[in-house]
Amino acid sequence: MLWNLNGENQRSLIVHPTHRGVPSNRVDDDEIERIRGQRSRLFYNRGMRWATQSVLCATTPNRNHGGVSWSALIHTNEDLCFVLSLWLNSTIGFLIHWTQGMRQDPGRARVGSKAVSEIPIPNFEELSENDIQKAKNYFNELSSSPLDVCTNVHIDANRISIDNAILDVMGIPQAQPILDRIRELWSQEPTLRGIHRS
Image (cartoon, rainbow, N blue to C red):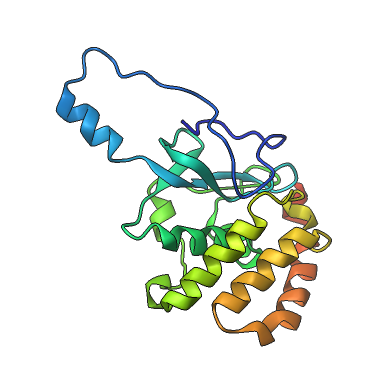
């Protein structure tokens, strides 16, 4: 299971489970199968701490269950998960999460488990097979690259590579200078570091 957030160990697109689980002997086989059907390889970080964490969306090597901090994302086309991982771990994905999350806790943006499905994302089902394969190739190339904490998006070369990859997949590489500027401005946002304007 991917249960806990661990900023020290979760520093790349690929992360490993934090816990193991054993079904209770009070649960029947049908219920076990229903629960197993909720496993995924893709997980959304509902309690993002910008100054200590690196990934908003984690991918596990095998199917797992989510937990208190990580919501499992399930789609019938697993190849779209690679696109979604790049998108959510890009500066654009961070910015959208930041605008949608509750920011009562300094340096953090929380979303409830039900609110995860309301996070706006492009309709990646409209991408061509070539674009989806391109995303998969980018993901494989970048998945083990160490990522800096989110407050350092403007100086993290691997994060910038993720940004450029998602722009390429979406067919808008010409937007790179605009995203460079957005990345620079967003990295200076005081609430990312737990500073609230009065």
